[in-house]
Image 1 (cartoon, rainbow, N blue to C red):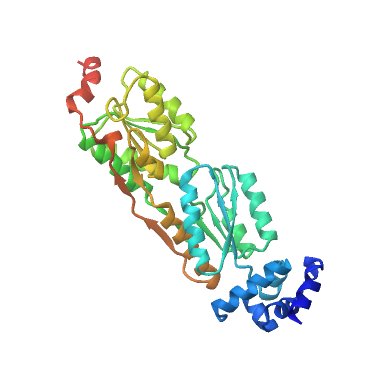
Image 2 (cartoon, rainbow, N blue to C red):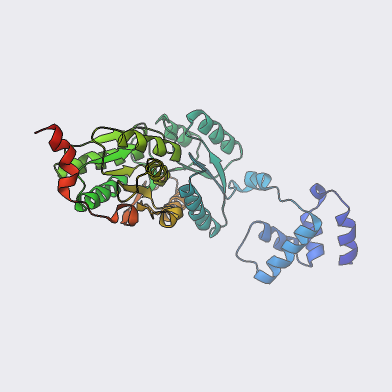
Length: 361
């Protein structure tokens, strides 16, 4: 009987397969099939696998949109990042997916490429698909009223890495200011007095926090040299900026870069000039992506823990979905400087002031 139903059902259009068809094929009740589709923990694992095999054999496609209309939840979150090519975001999204998977959720990923217009289109499309919430890394130039707009849509939003608008808001990120302070302290401890900062724009919080840490640390150590070069946060700009700096009459002996991508470009630029990163100029990145440890030389970098940030962001979103009116929460992880060959070498303090002394007798 079951085999006959299987053969007759398999010849039908997948859209006409019913829960009763699946139940007959799997030898279970219709209600059990419904529980499996809704990922209920009440179903035994063996039964769940049997039903899932029948679903696959019959070619059934679960209409989650229709289920959402009935249950008012889709078990989906939208995730909007601004640089999907940066391995930092790969690690962060892995953390998001791990946390969501434990709760039966999935994510839809979009790349804004730091365009507010592109970001707006993605958010509107996610609204059409009735996602339960948004994890948003705001694009540069994002209007702060966007967070209020999402609230009027009834769409919970957790900001990640960057934040716009007035608090309170849900946010997950790292203390970029502290991370840069750690980098400056390390370099000063190695004898550097001419420390430059490469990359970033002031239009978002994550850059402002980095620059604040840089300026405050220089002042705290009584250093007069300050070179802060704005640019996009790419290898290409790191490559160009370091060559520009090293051509100056008083070049830096060390650079701190907005992220590891800029730092990788800076090290390539030094090599193009015939200089050795870590010897002729120390280089420090931010993020500590996997490639940092594998570089030549290995890159000193401020670990910002993207996987953990992703997990925390997902946790905040699920908490907000469950309790829309609860207290807003900000999770800011403490960074940690990972010292490697690109900045390990100490220099004599006198060598870092030699050029300045020759110009100001």
